[in-house]
Image 1 (cartoon, rainbow, N blue to C red):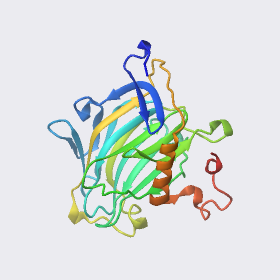
Image 2 (spheres, one colour):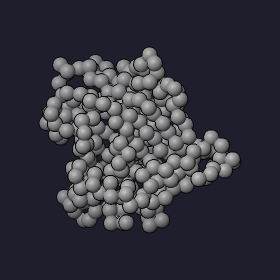
Image 3 (cartoon, helix red, strand yellow):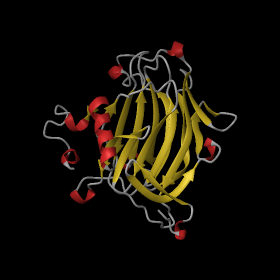
Image 4 (tube, helix red, strand yellow):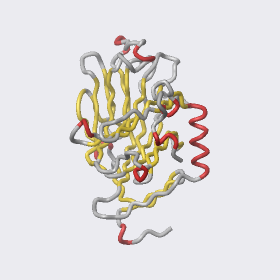
Length: 278
């Protein structure tokens, strides 16, 4: 498929049935071309390929942010999570708007550590104008501590997708035309962090952080971001194809462990409206 010469510095991405024509920002040969350490004890490897985030009792953790902000974007980031007894720790990757916290937008991926031999939980949530309560949680079909795996957030005017190694696991469609809020007015920046949340992260806070295992280390590499251009380039997208939908159904049927839409105790008067919309 040809791309118009007017769309220089653009790429056509075909990814699990999602087509996007957009300007691409890639972290070049070094990860710190696109990401900058923001707080705590982290470092960039001498070859510039890997960011390592550290957590010990004294530091409180560490984090980074993207140099750029985005208005609709897709990001891919490879992460190797804290190995062994990671209970109490949280490793994150998320888009978040700047400005007032009360009205912030956020697309959140949090990896909740666990005891050795127990699975990590990938906790996802989406905040719109300061309101979240859209949690879905997943176990993974591999050990995320022995190698790097790719975690992706796709945020367009059509929908939000979360993907793991190219497999979609979650979709939130834009139903703003039917009165359901959707993040569409605030630019967002990408963040990553490693921090201690022993009061809630592992088995509801019943298992605390074992500081004898510190320092805890999470590693990130191969950051890319594809964003609609502020210069006015078009941003195209479309529905997932049948294969992508089948793959997402497989992941959700086999690995989803919590879905706010199915929590009748929490939503005793009925699930939020987007849960019923195709």
